[in-house]
Length: 355
Image 1 (tube, rainbow, N blue to C red):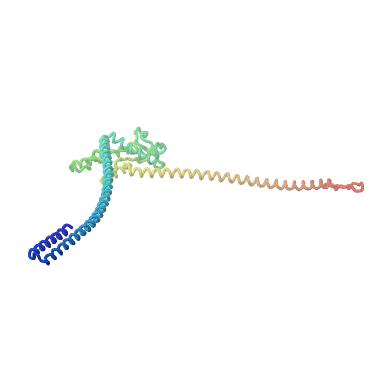
Image 2: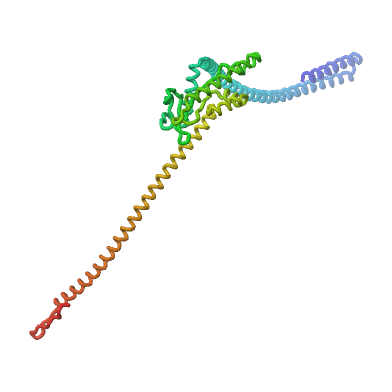
């Protein structure tokens, strides 16, 4: 807008300059006066047009500026709302991250505590026994002495971590928890030298074989327990290591009649034993029900025999009652005849004798 006005002003100035030049050339002439008058009118019209144009331009600019201001305000409000939501989401995520970090810190503390527990043989044994008890409790229920017992003393004086009173032919099955950890850690630690890991592997095998020998010699008693026992390994990783890379240990345990179990496999085995026990109990009650049904059948036969006799007696009595009713009717008729006797001509009509 300013450029247009500037151009018009320049044109006005040029026209005035031209007018002055023409006046100087034609002084005191009528034509010069006319020119001056026309130029004045032209200048006046130009100023009016400029004013009108400026007002129109100002109005349009105000309108456009208002529209732009409204759009900018709306856009700013929209962006502010989105920013506010984003900021709120960021705060929520930061809160969750902070909570997760606290849990990670607590987990680190727990891992350190567990590490301290597993470094000691005694506490490691307690850890295995607790895991074993939790599995038995979850499968058979808490303190179900009819099916299992913890710290059970056998006739040879040894105490098994747990025994299961399974049905025949399994009988009493001893379970003992073993946790060969020290040499296993060195064996799987890749930061150690190959020689050290090889030595640890040999010692690990010896540890496992010793545990198998102990269980086989202590917890398999002829006539008292099953001819097999279970070795519970609380760590799935150690159990997987034995089955994947040490098949000779699995074969050795099989020859010694010892089942190697982990938490997962022990749960499966105990679940199967529970199903066997339930089926045996169900079959036992089925035989009892069958026996009782046979007894009930015998009693029902006796009932039918006696009912038939009673029915015959009832029929005989019924016939006697009918005969008695016939005789009673006849007597009643005779009494009726006697009651209806009439005297004719002062003579007594002889009454028919009662038959």
